[in-house]
Amino acid sequence: MGSEFSQDRYDPLVKLVVTGTIGIDTVYTPRASREGVSGGSAAYFAAAASHMGPVGVVAVVGGDWPKEHEAILRALPGVSLDGLESRAGSRTFAWGGRYFEDVNRRETLFTEVGVLQETPPSVPDSYRAAEFIFLGNTHPAVQLGFLDQFPERQLVVADTMDLWIRTAHGDLMSLLGRVDGVIVNDSEAAELTGMRNAISAAQKLLDFGPRFVVVKKGEHGAILIHPEGRAVLPAFPVEEVAVVDPTGAGDSFAGGFMGYLAREGRGDFKALQAAMAYGTVLASFTLEAFGLDRLRELKPGEIDRRLRQFQQIARVG
Image (cartoon, rainbow, N blue to C red; front, side, top):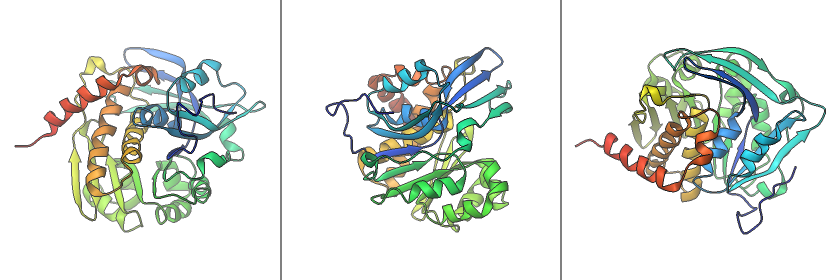
């Protein structure tokens, strides 16, 4: 499946690439519900990162993937779908979940793996010179396979989940030994290390190989642990009535985070701190609508205004 973007709209040799899932979500919240939502880790990541610069997607969908979902991604300037494979005889990954009044809590109602059980998609030649790689959540052996397809990589960051911590621990440890950074939530960090304190867990994760660790704590913000220091940022304060759908907020954080690093061409401690702020702001917009609806409508001015607000909120002294 080729991209419809012309060369004057984006550089075909993209600098940032995300590997991950494209899915169809069903979401129930205390205030509303929606079926057939455009979702998946790669979709949210790309939608957020596109506001920073070009991003290439490596993912696979089935023949049932809605045309309107494809149109949403293709309409995002800077998103390349050269690495998106469509398999007519397969079914797209699907997920359903229900959120509670405390939106940090949710239950998974169903997961249909579909096409993800098959051979992973290939990395197109136009992506192989990418320098910034985000390995979205999937089996760590698959993530390792993707890693070797980017010979020019300069900064590689990975995501994971509790399932792989329990069922593919060896592969996950191998992956952590080869990436520059890892982004996990606080419960995953605790399960990986056996340490409940997020700071202690993140510090322990550095011993496994990554150069830096970001621990997401939902409405309590995020923590960065790096050999040069530590940084803590709050979440952007979103009123309860404005939270429509929390799905994809973590992937949007990663998209804003990596998008900033790729745009700046840096991965030093100061750049990582700034990247966290951009990730936090992009994630806050994601909460305000179902699926990609808010991210695809965003204007640069909105991001700049919210970033300035966030800088005022996070400033000390």
